[in-house]
Amino acid sequence: MPCSPPKLRRTHYSKDIKPELDGKEVVVCGWVERVRDLGGLVFVILRDMEGRVQVTFPKRSGGLYEKAKELGKEYVVAVRGTVKFMENAPGGAEIIPEELVILNVAASPLPLDPSGKTDANLDTRLDNRVLDLRRPKVNAIFRLRHNVLRFIRSFLIDEGFTEVQTPKIIASATEGGAELFPISYYEREAFLSQSAQLYKEQLSSVFEKVFEIGPCYRAEESRTVRHLSEVYVVDVEVAFADAEDVMNLLERLIYYVLRKVADECRRELSVLGRKLEVQEPPFPRYTYTEILGVLEERGIPIAWGEDISTPAYRELGEAIKGFYFITEWPTKGKPFYIKPRENRPEVCEAFDLMYEWIELASGGTRIHEKELLIKRLKEQGLAPSSFDFHLKTFDWGMPPHAGWGLGLDRLIMVITGVENIRECVFYPRDRDRLTP
Ligand code: AMO
Image (cartoon, rainbow, N blue to C red; front, side):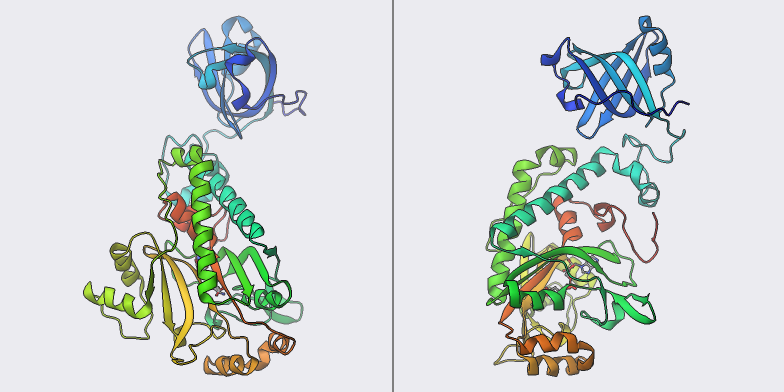
């Protein structure tokens, strides 16, 4: 089959092919989504990044008509032709071709139907992710993801934040040793970063308001619908702030993003059949102790200080709808850098942002005094000497500070309404999956 270099240069996208262009010559490029041969006519639906356009090959076009009949699904083509008003075509116009260039062919049969008409299980979809991403619903999820990122950036930049990048190859754990991925780093052992935590704290002592959107690596043993080994987290740190200040920032961010999605991503929401509830801040706040009370009432007793299990979170999601915060967590279950209450050190200034049963973010007021930080490291069984590089920055004018980390992939789950986090990540990584 010919795979010649493109002789035709695109002049229009599918969305531009409208009745107003009737009689005009255009060149469109894209993928063959469907070929319908009605005897005297071949209809080709061509897909590009903007949508779909119909190209109609009448029998009288001779060689072109014969060539069109040979097109297969996902062939890559360029078409030069004339726009013709056509009420029943997508966009109200079609193209009558004068030239058809096949830029590449595609296998037949394909391992997955990219039109989305035939469903497939998630593993097959992920194994053939590029084809899967062409399916309209899947495509809409990732267009939403792109827009959500855009809205998050624009909100934080407008709030005066500086975007930073922190290393993903690191020397010591921040969120607990068990979930670290070791890597071989020249003649030493190193780890993949679990969190931007320490670096964002340090950078808050320079730029005051910082954010990072980057990957975090967690060697999660469990196979769940909300855990991956590689996740994207929106990390924020603010100098001269406490937990309440950054909770306020977080709920305003969520509200802003939801409102922008509802206003500007109508097409994607409608492809997904999704009606978005835009919840206004302030979001309800429950203390950890109050949450135990809610669970107790629903027949799930948890001893004070214990973790909340997945079934308990599921139950909580039945009891409390929408976004809410859980505050005043037991100190022993939270990381070493979270500030314990001064008058009640068994409780700390940590919070989680929840959406029903899913934890979307966690954060809190940080410890900014070096001695207390060293004490907390020891209490958590960590060696302060492994944190020398970090601890010394506390001798150089560390302001009081607070921040949070928001799981981007989980936020996309909530916005799109999908049940499995894998649906929201281009190429998910988990206990079993390392390819594609
Ligand atoms: P935490 O460990 O709670 O906090 O992570 C922050 C948020 O990241 C998301 N997340 C995950 N999502 C999917 N799969 C995972 N394995 C996974 N792990 C985390 C969650 C979670 O709420 N340094 C702190 C943040 C801070 O205090 O600023 C931290 O990493 O949505």
